[in-house]
Amino acid sequence: MVSVIYRSHDGTAREVAAEEGQTLMQAAISNGIDGIIGECGGSAMCATCHVYVVEAFIDKLPPLTDIEDEMLECTVAERRSRSRLACQIKITNALGGLAVDLPEAQA
Amino acid sequence: MQFVEDHIATAVSHDIPVWDVDPYDVEILKNPVPFYAELRERGAFVYIPRYAMLACGRFDETREVFSDWERFVSSRGVGLIDFSVAKPWRAPSIVLEVDPPYHTRTRTVIARALSPRAVSELKDSFAAEAEKLVDELLEIGEFDAVGDLSEAFPVKVFPAAVGLQEINKRALVDYGAVGFNALGPDNELRRTGWAKASEIVPWITAQCKREALLPAGFGATIYAAADAGEITEEEAGMLVRSLLSAGVDTTVTGIGNTIWCLAENPGEFEKLKADPKLARPAFEEALRYTSPVHSFCRTASLDTAVNGIAIPKDTKILCVLGSANLDERKWQRANRYEIERKPVGHLALGVGIHGCVGQNVARAEAEAVFTVIAKKVGAIELVDAPTWRPNNAIHALDSMRVRFLKH
Image 1 (tube, helix red, strand yellow):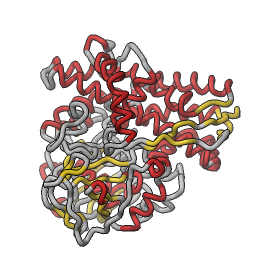
Image 2: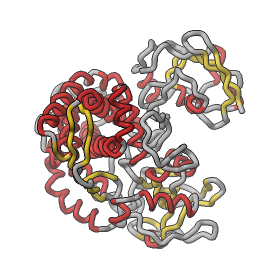
Image 3: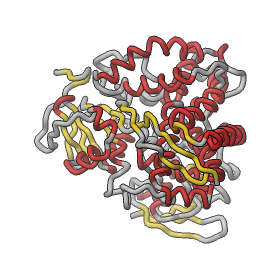
Image 4: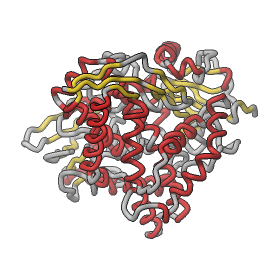
């Protein structure tokens, strides 16, 4: 289990024990995190699992693919340099303590 | 090496149960739920002797095979034919039936054309068309929910969104059906489809050309990528063709199956009427519950194992999505249609790099239709028992007489 933290737009934070191999989107859905929808189930198709990753972890994440990059142009909340799609981030041990901020809206 | 149905025959293995069943039997295609249940019951994988292939129908294993594009490739065809040993009926799709890195290039272009942003611009026109159609149907009262609603709506809005100027309803719906029947074995359905193809394909191909398309639309966005040098002119035409083969019959089926779910479950329809925002979840749950695409194949690219079960290189695997979506191991009350369920992760649209690229459009179409139905229709009554239209990959209704009662 790897501990990750979701910080909602209103400031409340929830720590979740994610399974290795799950994605950050799946861990949110299976733990009932409200600010993530994940409508497409993890195909980088719907841009409803948008998160802002804390600075310290940005370099530890898999690089942005063209498809994710394209989809981040379609998020409802503003895209920032820390923007990623949670469905494209696979949980590994190296990501223990990862924190993400959730945008105000996903759809 | 032995060949069966134009793929490499897999040998029987001691740790995989043998089940002498024909998943393409017309009775199974019409009413697949008992087949799904027995498939899950018999094992994570079963060996099907008549096709010398494996089939899987439990959620975890099906998801693993279906989404791991490196070990279980799509480039050898998502039907029974293995393109590495036999010729497909038409040039394969350059997005559905290819692997990365080539796939990434075409997928990026088509995903851009069908992006959430592009689709949100169509929302108002979809809503207006849906309202017009539902008003007409309320006036008529009794009608065929397949032809008059499920086919009528996508055919009205989707080809126009692509940029088509000429609409041929029968050709558009049948082209999808022919393509999906082609994924099965050499049976009556596939043969009848191919016989029809010669009439439909020239019309479809002509519609996909740059000069046939409107200057704005999904098609124009794809041709703009050709202008930018991302893809060739020919590839642009192939991608527009993919929109037409994958974007009509599937959505038609999804909408029809949702009507069926709501008609069969009046309690759920009451919930939708009370909260029209449930239109989208009602469609999503119908996708899980009825799996409009009931199965697609993958081919093992190497010797591997899934959940400890050895799978030899070259094995064709039938991924029975309809079964995985009803697996009690994954879903609580799996056999019930519940519109308040959040079925995130169902396999009806696939998942991963080959996940349905048009899903935003499909959801937008469904949202338009079911929002207006929620607001205007008081009750949906089945006039008589609906009939199903067997297809080698699609689980669709053939006809469904219904009555819309006013609020």
